[in-house]
Amino acid sequence: MLRCTSRVRGPIALTILLAAASAVGAQTPFVMGGVTAAPGTLASGSLRVPGGAGDEGTDIPFTVIHGSRPGPVLALIAGTHGVEYPPVLALQRLPTWINPQALSGTVVLIHVANMPSFLARTIYYGPKDGQNLNRVFPGRRDGTLSERIAFVLTTEVIDRATHVIDIHCGDGNEWLRPYSYWVVTSAPDVVAASKDLALAFGLDHIVIDTERPNDPGASVYLANTAMTRGKPALTAESGGWSRTDEESIARVERGVAGVLLHLKMTASGPPPVEHPVWLGRNEVLRSMFTGLLYPMVEPGQTVAQGTLVARVTDFHGNLLEEIRSPFAGEILYVVATPPITKGEPVGFVAERATALPAIK
Ligand SMILES: [Zn+2]
Image 1: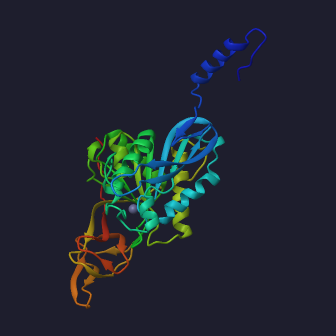
Image 2 (image 1 turned 180 degrees about the vertical axis):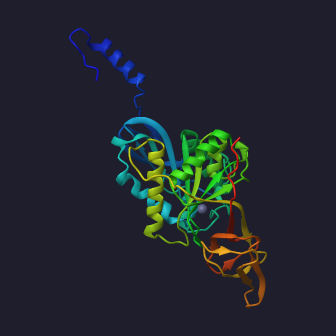
Image 3 (image 1 turned 45 degrees about the vertical axis):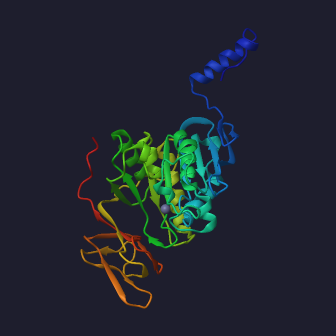
């Protein structure tokens, strides 16, 4: 603590104080969406997505928990897809137990990234443009509504963060066991740090994703947008099937607490997962037909090559297709409601990895 003495007063003392403060990296206010969070406080507001052709734009509600000390800027994003509720509900709870006075760094909570889809209760696609928000990153300033949402998230959130977690679950029609994606196609240091994020988040199944684009101008996915910009990131999945179960919500909270400890933003939290199941080869199984879907497996189920995953019939009950697992593995999610459209996912199967990829 620096005190004013009788020999050092007024402007000189202030100068010394400011110099001392900057030397230890004092925390400065965090401004977002027109609201200011002072160090050690919390502030909430909305990011405005301007209107475009045929729509009035939308708002993205956020909360900033701004620590009293400097540190990482961790962005947590929920509601990228409209009927994925446990992440949204988990983020509602975080301000009740993340204490800004005891926090190093800043947590940015994006409560509902895709408000049009959330309010219209649409799975996969935005109601105005029929686009999947998590396929249009980094977005466009003058694009469709989904592209404009992506642009605001990229420029106002991802660009300001040091670490990003995009928190999903099975969409309204998807029955899912928890897992996360570790993307290995970005810069080695980012890939290594992203692996640590996945371990800290604690989900015990981790898909090694080798197929994400590495072009920042066409990053497609939210978390990949962060990674192509040099920021460690993670996509996590907990819950699904339109449910709001406590277990799935608590799993997200636990994951965030683990990441906060890992990034040294808090002094305590749960440990990283020690022996996760690493999943290598993976495939989204898709229907070749439009009709009625009958799932034949459950998430978490081990399947052999050729195991029947789902049947598709036409609307008169005639069998159109039997969808079988192309290899032995584990079912991570399966579509569990009857509507199925040609080309849409039916389920996701992944095989245990025998070795982790070398990070070069
Ligand atoms: Zn999703």
